[in-house]
Image (cartoon, rainbow, N blue to C red; front, side, top):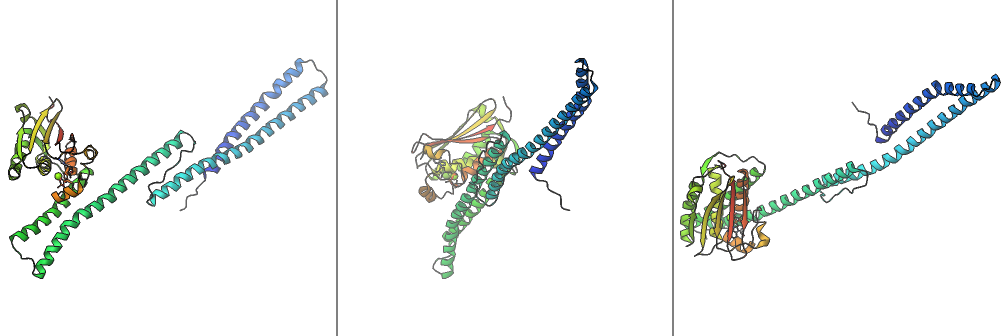
Length: 370
Ligand SMILES: Nc1ncnc2c1ncn2[C@@H]1O[C@H](COP(=O)(O)OP(=O)(O)OP(=O)(O)O)[C@@H](O)[C@H]1O
Ligand SMILES: [Mg+2]
């Protein structure tokens, strides 16, 4: 069934006509019920006794009243038509700009904006909301495009390496020995880590990260992460040490042990990767009433101010050429931030500058607020 669609102009006109008619009926009722009586009273008081004069005067009053009412009604109706046409045009024009902009956005052009047309606060609000929405969509689209590009880029290197080795093996120029197999496994591991990390960040951003939270003691958490990293640090002759006061060691956070372990591992991996042999890395922790702060501080490469704000973005590397040689994908800190935020906490980076070390701070709500 087709629903009849009334345009704005006929609706507005109908509304105004109803108002005008109500006014006219009221005016007519008052004029006929009260007007003649008042007029008659005044004629009587004036002392005129000639019935002919009285009749003529009263007729003149009735005619004049009828003409005035009729003319007023006609003028009001004409004005209603003009006003509704004018207002409809203005509103219609404003709506057209919104409709066109919406069509542009639907077509993938996120630069479309609605101008504020001076049609009152409601329209300006609509225009502003629309523009904010278009800008946000544009930003999301930009991020999505960049992320897909980065992802393809990150996959290319290990895939090309695998392809090269397999071709060499097939042609008999590369031997299938322990070393080559380890190399192949390395590349596969890199791809699978990439897939896992991307999936974790995406899941966390959608708020769907499954977590098995339980009270975890800060001391135990840090000890486990430090113990796990110790061999790798020793191999690069970098000094790793935990400095956690006893009061903080026994403080609990309500956390997913594995995921929070991954946070510390990521930070320790970075500190290791971006610190030269002979350097120092210290893991410390403090607490106040509401929060526990775990710090991983190194005296390594440091991060320039312009990069600090971006290091948590997916695929962001401060020094692309050098960091790729290090083998990083630039996703570790994005994963770290996703996990920390899923715990209701926040992670921040600080560095006095290039070559002056970096400190990463993970702040988590304390499980037993003091
Ligand atoms: N401790 C640090 N010192 C100096 N720079 C750092 C440190 N930690 C991170 N960065 C900078 O931040 C960037 C992003 O770090 P992130 O952990 O996300 O990526 P990655 O370590 O390069 O790769 P991935 O962790 O995915 O293997 C790094 O490329 C590096 O430039
Ligand atoms: Mg990293």
